[in-house]
Image (cartoon, rainbow, N blue to C red; front, side):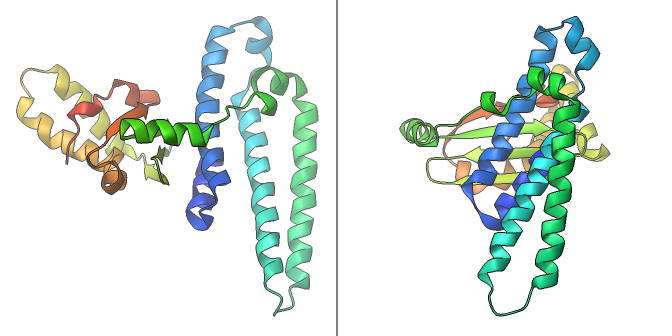
Length: 232
């Protein structure tokens, strides 16, 4: 979750496509890991599979990438003397790189099983955009974490990423909406709740998705949400 959140923050700050792709790749990658754990329920996975170890590796990789980007940005500014800043950034880079190598060595067996960068999901963006243009559609990818719902949207001509807070109020909202659509006594409440869930999940993308079909990749509790009922 932290890695996805960092990638989204970096994308919204720099608008560099590689950060958007990282957010989507990690989102679908973590879902794939969870599925792989369920399917390959072997002794070695039971003994060594720890998602927190994978998350630590992901977070360090993102921190290193963030520092490298900062160094490149600061080097463009040749006006001020930044010797101390570069020294601190390089020291941090060395420290994080060392920690990353230690984790990779310590959890080599686990990482080989559940996290292989060579197997990371690739996204042929040109082909995806072409298909979205043909279908007049947008692709929505959601990742439900402990504190945020991270959402990434791909259309024929743009990317949008947002992180929506998943506090107790929003958790209760989603649960209440699911209960209401199963009850025959609460039909009057469904529209109000549907509007509130729309505001949480789709409103940040309203201008781009208007009039288009949606291809939705849900996660967690969102698998149970009937998106077709959501409206502004």
